[in-house]
Length: 407
Figure 1 (cartoon, one colour):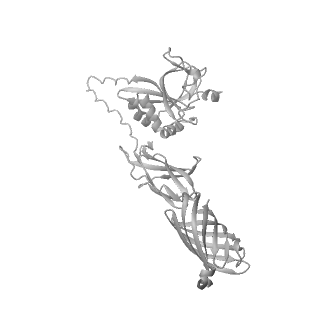
Figure 2 (cartoon, helix red, strand yellow; figure 1 turned 90 degrees about the vertical axis):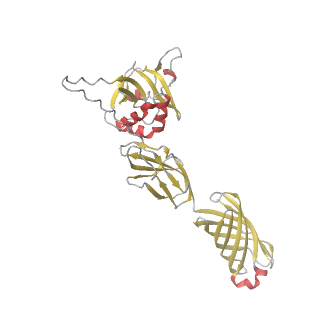
Figure 3 (cartoon, one colour; figure 1 turned 45 degrees about the vertical axis):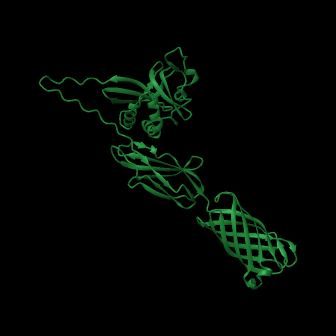
């Protein structure tokens, strides 16, 4: 039964709980539809983690509620002892409550719990400028609600024989650290390293104690985590697999307050594969009459960002001429890539029923569609001749071109 009751909390704007404009109060009869935070807060530690993970939204909610001056004190007190677990009974009132409609922070004021049973919540009390401020946070969804403001009791009068002691200064709220991170490069091939530099992060009233790094894949699943506990908070890691990734960084000060703003939002990087499948179709002309229609498939592997080794196998049927027969090719070329162009040279084995040759190959091409590390199409030209036929290259050399498809 407690679980069913708990599922009711986070939707402070639930249709069954909103009264008409004629009433001064918002009657809440159902909870749990539009939570500020998921999952359910089962302990004080869970509550503290919720505060750390929702700092930007919390700050916006306090501003919307007209209580921006209470934000720092609330965040600081969340990390201190004294958080209580309580029950809110039917009929109890709260001055305002923040919640989320999708990803948008909202505020509802003059809230009355009109459910049939109590619900579990955490109570936080903070002091500021001679007043005590009480907040209630429902366990099921983390909606932050303001309960009441009460003046602190006056200190007892000292004995007449002693001069009154001066009032103690109010404790200074711990300020959140300032997160600043740079990530380079944001586009790289698999196996290369990315540098995550949070060394410029700082804390206005202390020092940075640790930096946490998370790498998330395209499905938003954490695939790697690392915590740095010593300066200079610079970390290099290799990205082994191709894909789109998010890198999430947060810094924590020596008082345990965590921050991701303003300079540590999620950063996107793109990791591309080092190899691609390739297919060719073209035409090769030989003066000692034979015209071939080569069809090849292969794999292009990048040793460096601008240099690759391409291995291909194929079949070259004769479509005109009678000085050669249908042939089989096995080629290996090295290719230099510059902008949209590529230039290559290599060797190939050419087998037909009339002769076997070991060819020297030259080729060049230009990409006419797509991006380098994605599907694309190139136009290419190629010339090839057997090593032992260079003196007869005008008769037995083959020259031509075609289309190259990268997948």
